[in-house]
Length: 259
Image (tube, rainbow, N blue to C red; front, side, top):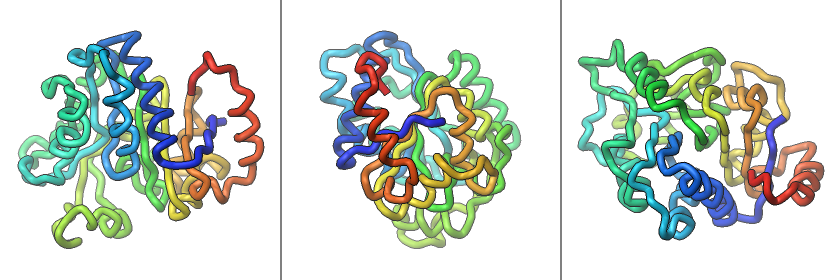
């Protein structure tokens, strides 16, 4: 079962996860991180500069979860630009050591295999940051995705395009396709850290943590992982049946174990 940590706010969640990541970097300056985009991981990225004060980050490596297919790389909402703007530049990471899937149309047929090979060559992801969609998707693995799936092209659901339209001038500008790490790829990371905030994510969180393991809720794949941590605020935890136990377990967890 995933470890569930219920915190008071997004800021508290960001500080908690940032402390874990900073510890990894201090122990292994070449650590490989899995980077998510969207609004959910922002509290972590915002807390990291203070947590990393004095640490050498020049050799940190990272792999983004996904990219839109066919988007102009110069577009401000290409995930290459988002990762650069929200993670690489604020933290002072080396841009050439942070990769996103290649969404270029002319090479898309083998872009998934290329990305899988790059992750394997780096030794795999140590800690993968995840958000979860209102329909339970992680990465861009929409409901129905195979738990064995690897990096590949997917068609975005109408709901996901509506959810992401806030980052564009209109929903018509949201690409129809993406290239995303598969659920099998995500499950290969050594530690999964899923974050969720707000009542709108409560049903998805409950399905991922306590519901049946089902392709209908891709986030439920975390139940198959030996080390998965779910960090949520009170609103996102509001539909968890065993919330009292999760609080009790966290309060009594040995501090040396971290998250």
